[in-house]
Image (tube, rainbow, N blue to C red):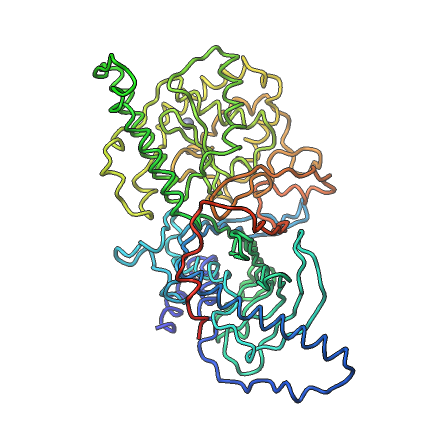
Length: 591
Ligand SMILES: [Zn+2]
């Protein structure tokens, strides 16, 4: 079965270089199925040197034993959890002028993790396999042919699905802090003849509950004809009681040779979120009550009466809007209301106040959890993607994005109200992108651009739009290589065919020069918005600006490694959120 898949995938190699990754990433999938039982290391044979050394060694052995035990608990736990997994990868080429690798193409994947049947490929239903998309929501691109592609990356949440002392040699390296969490750093290498796809690399074990909080390396040895990628996999303390779950994975290769002689050269970020979908649903029930408000009007007012035709129309549109927002939040694509919404709303309010605009119902701003750069409106709600917020260089360019959307609302561009019928919301997760489409036609886009320029020229951002124009130039410059980043999935992209949004801002902006270190037209991904993978709350990252020393460090729209500041969740934080499923506690610790 595997063999034939490889053969099939090998065919793709001739069509497209990227499919090399397909097979490569896919090869991550079967970790260590065929193991021959190695004899348990005999502790008694250890040479008794000094008493101190023995004590230290046994202390270390205990740490390793605890970590292994926790890892089995972790595996059992993961079988109950179904976070969203997003992988965004950039293939690189050397840029001679900048003397640094730059993206030449990109791949995007979004799916839902399901490890309930183990972590082999059966755990991930191929989206092209009839109707079984329940486990995997994936759409998004013509890269559909690469259906095995995401598996390899999702696999990187697991160190070894059957992590046993007998398969490995462990070497103490040092103690080290990751953020505020003190860790024991250990080098881990598989013993000989213990099967393919064991973990080889370094692990960080926090010294309170002995969870592995980071592991960096690859799987080894690789099977014939396939390769394992390197990765740096981070977990975050998401629940009290020492529950650490996968949150961020960075992967990169620059010298891995494919079988046909290609060199892998890419970098990729994988993010996980939406662990606590149950609570996101509960929140949504609350929203539904709000939708029903008109029917309970008689409780508050003696002059209850039917809505007038205009009111009814507005109410109908509002219902469609709330249905959609509710749905997007439920499945983990839209962040719950939070601090970033307020920041966005402030900018929108600035625009409205200075332009004397009064719109009812009130305009709200929300953030889409995903990386691709897009924005759109759902009724009177403006939605901006996390990736977009990350890469925008300043507030004026944010104002540009928001004002374009505000203009759609001001101009009365309507939401398709077919979504006001509740039954239209009963589609599986993975069809969200097909069923919901907020893209505008070209006419509406042009009208919104025109209106937005008018509004901006009458706002506090009027004299600061140079960077916004530069940002658009950077978008244009990188768009051919970053087709999967610079595109809309639910709404409109910054590019519409050969037209660039708000293009008139470009004419009045400075000359775009990627080599100038003091010209920052767009930021790297991941620099502004931090995700809480448990409840999807977003937070603005407050970091001091770092002085850029070379053009290579600008990395506009690019993927970079992760270095999260790890913290422990105070055990005193009482949360109404559901605890990790009870089953987990009783689950067997693997076999
Ligand atoms: Zn638009």
